[in-house]
Structures are given as structure tokens and as C-alpha cells.
Image 1 (tube, rainbow, N blue to C red):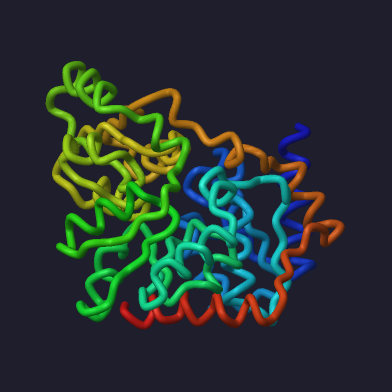
Image 2: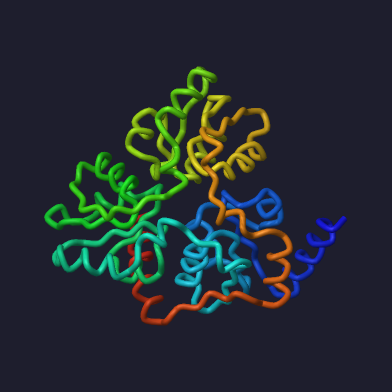
Length: 303
């Protein structure tokens, strides 16, 4: 009954505040269920930018809400729990990126969208896990490329594009915990299952996968593929959406260790309170926002 009351309150507040609720694919099931849209971080931010809503409430981690604020300067962007962070962002302070730029002064900087607004503002292009290879390919072949912060995604994009990159030594702690032994164990248990993993996984893991895909790519693959069984190598929260969208198919989590605690911070009560009190608005200095927007929009212009 408490859950039902919370849902009713949120639905009422959403209408009163002219708000849209966005939830990342790794969020708790109850948050995914009440969201207006569920997806990956950049896809949700683009929905936010095109929405008529005055208030964007982003259920994800902080850099995702920042990205929405970068693209939607005229709207109020809320995050129900501002302590929902990201290990990869934390290991990439902007000072480190500036130092790397000073060591390679003529390089083009490509930053993964999983980075702070300050790091995006130091970048020439942003990229997502879905389009990192295309962004790298689009850079002038005569220019050196610094890729920050995810080394694993950078290695994958370098291999796919044939470009040499200067890597920052960052990584996603969740995807780093997925091992080649995990894949081999699951494949022995489910020999007919297709293996799809996220490019934030280590090269040892991606080499063993049938498909290396972003979260959005995994959702499309599961829906469109003739395969009926999958081993899923990413944060385990996505499996709820996969099951929900494909009730006739089977999905196996590659590792129970693949859980991001920060992605589970937001619950219905925090969502209700954020909307009711209009609390935890994400604001950025305009010079940071504008510089970061340039890098994001350059990526978007590549399609």
C-alpha cells in the first residue's frame, strides 16, 4: 500500500510540475516502471532536450543529470539523490585531463559521455559507447587523439577504427569486475546462448563475446535477433528491461558482482521528495556548460 501511495503521489506531482521522469537502464525496477522514458544516458538527455516538460527529473547518476543540464539550459534538471556518483568520473579529475592535454598540445580530445561536465568542457568531441568508433574515425587522420576516461572503451574503439590513441587510465569498476572466466563458465552452462557484452569490459572479455554493444544496442539486439537466449555482460539492472521487453526470451547475468551501488540509490521515496520539494537541481557555470555543449553537439552532428 505504501508503494502504491508513493506511485500515486509521483503521478500527481509529475502532472502538477509539468515534469518528465527519465530512468537509466540500470535503475531499480520500480523506477524503470514509473519513468516516462527508459534508456541510456545520452539518449535520455536528447529526449529531455526535445521534451515540452519544464522539469527534467533524471534517475541515474550525477554525470547523466549534468549532461541533461548541458543540453537543456532553459529547463530545471533534478536528480533525486545527488550522491549517486560514478567511480570512473571520480578517478578522472579535470586537472588530470588538462595535464594530459599539456603533454599532447596538438591532440584532439575525445571524452566518453561518462565524464564530468568539466571534462567534457576540455574536450573537442564527446562519444557514447555506441558511437565511440565512429567519432574516432571522424577525427582528422593527421591528428593525435587523446581518449578519456575509459581505457577499455578506448582500446575497443582503437581496434575497430585502426587508429592509435593516447589513453587515460580510467575504467568502470563494475565492468572491470566481469572476467573472461565468467564468460567461459556461463558458456559451459548455456552453450546455445549468444554472448553480448558492453565495450567498457576488458579486452579479454570483449574478445570472447559474440557481440559488443552499448546498453541500447543490447536492447535492440535482444528484440531483433533470432536468438532466444543471451548471456549479458553489463550491469545487472538491464536484465529487468530485457525480460520486460522480451518475455519469451532468456537472459543470464554474466556475474552477480556486476552491480553498481550508485545506480540503486534512487527509490520511489527519493523521487517523490525531489519532485515535491523541487530539490537537488543540477546547475553548471555557463562557461562550462557552453564548452561542454560544443563537444556533445559535435558528436551529435556526426549522427
